[in-house]
Image 1 (tube, rainbow, N blue to C red):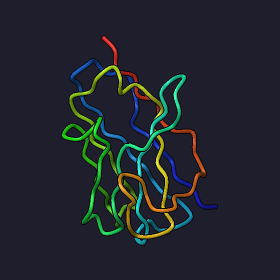
Image 2 (image 1 turned 30 degrees about the horizontal axis):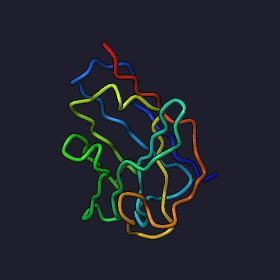
Image 3 (image 1 turned 90 degrees about the horizontal axis):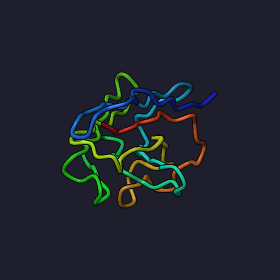
Length: 126
C-alpha cells in the first residue's frame, strides 16, 4: 500500500521552530517531487513548499519564504520541512503529497496525488 505519513507537529511559541517529516512506505520517493501543504481551521488547503526528486529545486509560497526549508533524504525515503520563526498564522494541519513527475509546478508537485493522510497538527501560540 502506497502511503505518506506526516509527523513532527506540536505546540510551539511564536518565533519557535519545528521540523516535520514525511515518510513514504510502499514506494520509493526517489523519482517524484514532494510537496508540503497545510490547512488552517476554516480555510482551504494550500500549498506551502515543493522539492524536486533530486532535491536540486525547491520552491516556497511567499508566506513562508525565508522561514521554512524543505529537504529530502532519499536514502531514508523521507522529506522534511524545517519551520523557523513560526507565527500564529502558521497554525494548521500539515500534509505532504507526491507528484506524478520529478518536478514541481511552482510550489506544488506537478500533478500531485490528492491522497491525503492524517497530517500533523502545528499550533503556534503563546
